[in-house]
Length: 74
View (cartoon, rainbow, N blue to C red):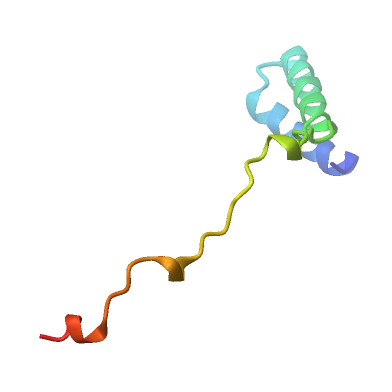
């Protein structure tokens, strides 16, 4: 996150949530730190093991029982 935007958001949050002079500074530091660590960690992906995947076998749909069109018309 951009440092300027981080500072603005942390300042606004500290103004709304801070109780006094010291409390406002503490709240500002906490919000500023939290906004800085939001997206700094890389996303971990789960490794895909191709050997553990089940192989899908294609079935032949034409080899099933045959229904004639004459049997469907009554």
